[in-house]
Length: 279
Image (cartoon, rainbow, N blue to C red; front, side):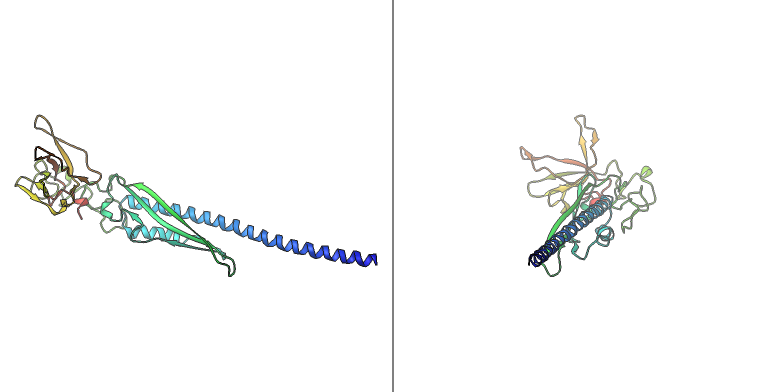
């Protein structure tokens, strides 16, 4: 009788051990899968960071939006890793993933940002997925010297339709800027190719010597040309090249507008915006 009782107790303990082992094993498998998927998430996130940095670098030297998007697809979307239990996807708007989105607004000294979304979810069998979204972004400043002759054509060697084969010839007339007396080929020599910007109380105007005229390009009060400072002795001192559009001041002193003299030698249509920024 005692032997029978001992056998029954032994079977109960064996069954208990099997149930406990089964529950522990399932929990252990879940832990292993979770660790693997977390490692894959980290891998994909790092892959995305590298892709956005390379995309931002290309945008900083003049690459087009389509070229930058291609880099993101090639370096990230086509290479990120997904397991049977993890669903991953790249999610970004090709029209707005670069700030500023307009290529001509990405000028020297300004900051650009490439921002993409990386969406990943963990699912098991028919269970609902646990999903998370990770924004990935890179910021860089547009480097100088990507348009040395400031003609709006990028000097960088890229697959860009606006690549410039004559890098030191602003008006592309075959005469290098170093020996060309009229850089923008507008009929005015570089020394006399200047203008006065001002706000007349109703509109922003530009005077190139033939009277102040309202210029459509200045309608929002911004200009992008080199400022020429008039010194107390009447001589001129050219200021630094602008790295971004600036506002024409609307301040008045005794109802007299404050003028700004600008260099138009790189502005062939004399509208207050250098050719490289005038699209």
